[in-house]
Length: 404
Image (cartoon, rainbow, N blue to C red; front, side):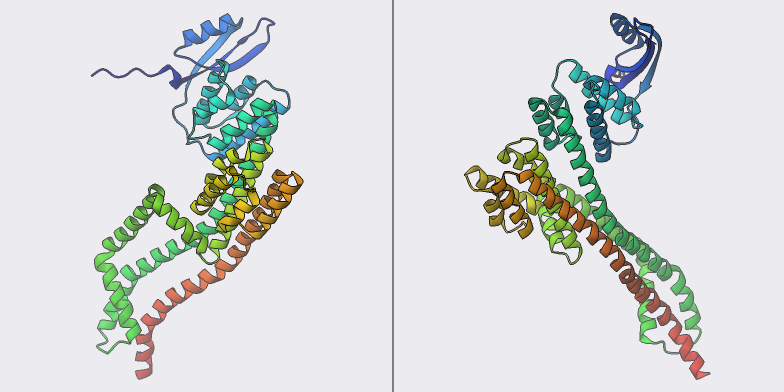
């Protein structure tokens, strides 16, 4: 069976040459071979001196932070008066991730052939969502693309920052609990059996706590593979169900908002993302009903997504945004008041932006408070578990000492 030929778009060629004025110029070009690069450059009046092929199929994955950095760089260069295609060249060459470079070169190629920037972005929905494309399209239509790219970059940076804060709040306790379980398992499998051999030679009755720990140790020794397999498989199944099942996602999103301590942080983070997204969309001139299409998903919680659908239906029938939000019983009083003031004053985007700033600060403070609170709490739990095991194993020794 013949091997399929590699597609030309798999290759990026870096070239160097001199223009008609004798100035050294450099760039990158997608092509099927060096001959094609040379022919294209000669038609542009460039004397080619060096052409080097570079594979871009490797490299790390493209993360939201990469897109945010690209958006900020593109907005900065366009504000400085750098042409769009040249801006793409500069950003692509400056990227350390080959996949990002390939993505930007693909988009640049589409724009160079006459495709609008928003349409070029829509060809890559994995990296540019509807909100991103809608804002770019609005910027192109209004002739303020660099301004909207700047707002979009700010929005992405704030969204990424708040997600990182949530992750930091959840990662620490989970990591500590995992380490604690491993430590307890090691003690149960390797340490307790050694004590059991010693206690067996005593020939005396053992205290109830010691017998309980030794019984747990026997279970770990005999069925350690089942315990680790059940926990690992359960976690994997749970995460996959959460990721793939819409019903599971809705249930977990509701549960997360009701959790003590963590639920309050999740709620404030969702409110911050919701208000920030709607503020950014409305400031860009996107009609309110159309803007609400992207807002629900951006909140990152199914409860807010369902509430946004209801708000959109009510607003489409003539209900004010504030009244529609109030009907859902999801949004806090402060956001409702800010929305009402914004609608009355005609500065809805500014009021929602201030609400987003407030709740982002609230999330930051809540994460800091949680970090300071959770450390002693975890220490108490670990101390109780590990200390209880140690004390239960030394009780027979203490009892033997009293007899002697």
